[in-house]
Image 1 (cartoon, one colour):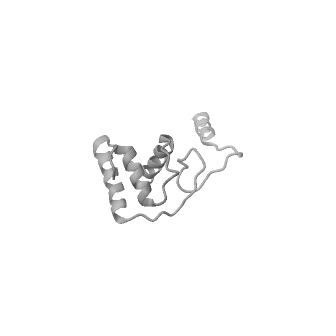
Image 2 (cartoon, helix red, strand yellow; image 1 turned 90 degrees about the horizontal axis):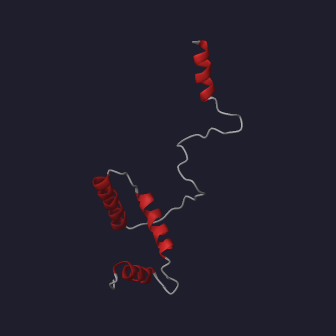
Image 3 (cartoon, one colour; image 1 turned 90 degrees about the vertical axis):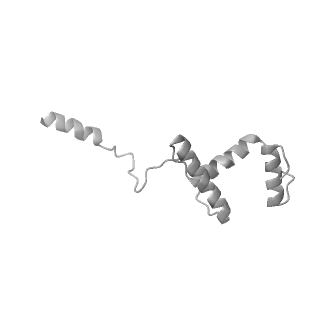
Length: 104
């Protein structure tokens, strides 16, 4: 009985080299920065609708932040050339044309 208890305690022991962090466990595997972004209510509503749709269809909980990060990474991976845009409206038009093949 005493040996079994010692084994259980030994398994839970945290080495002195590792720190125990407070709060939520770290979920990101790379460096990250927290930023503030202003979105219009219609954009927040759209992100929420995407999240709800994903949950209804697949059962997975994908939040706004994950959707925004995925959109940014997808744009980066697409190698769409946006160097000529001069405004947010130009960027919307260029991305819409690229994604749908139709003008905005």
